Amino acid sequence: MRRLFGFLPLALAILFCCSAASVAEEPDKDLDNVLKLFPGYHLLTLSERNSETRAFLKQHYPNRNPSVVHADFDGDGHPDYALLLKNDKSGAAKLVVLLCPTDDGCKAVYRLDLSGYAEVTYLKAASAGSRTSQTDAVDAGQPGPSAKLRATGIRVSYFEKGEVVLHWNRKLKRIEEIQTGD
Image (cartoon, rainbow, N blue to C red):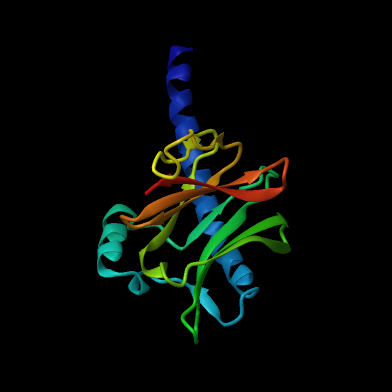
């Protein structure tokens, strides 16, 4: 019996790793369909970042695409997308957050022009359940807003310049921003 209880945590860990690996492979096939919603745009590539940002990303996030977060942002059980996109002709860049309530459709719910900051911008997921609060530098007179993330958020980092966490507000049914770093 003790041997069974000793084996159980190992079996659960193996199961968790295998399921996480299979989920990590799924976004690639769906991502092509999502990108078709933005003709004339492509995902911002590593080579389109400045040299310092590129070196940082290669060192700290070698196996992750810094232009994509694929997670459930609104808590409905369906994975959504945050994408850093760049126009093929004009070079204009933008951040787009899409909610995907079904497997066959996504809707953009947030857009931000990043044309002047694309070379230093990258995305990471902010874990559901984590607490985020506004940096003191924004308004020294009063404490800024804070939130406990009910679902995965999006950490938008401007390398050595600032950071914002985007999260879904269930009551207002929209993406909200909290500046967490300057």
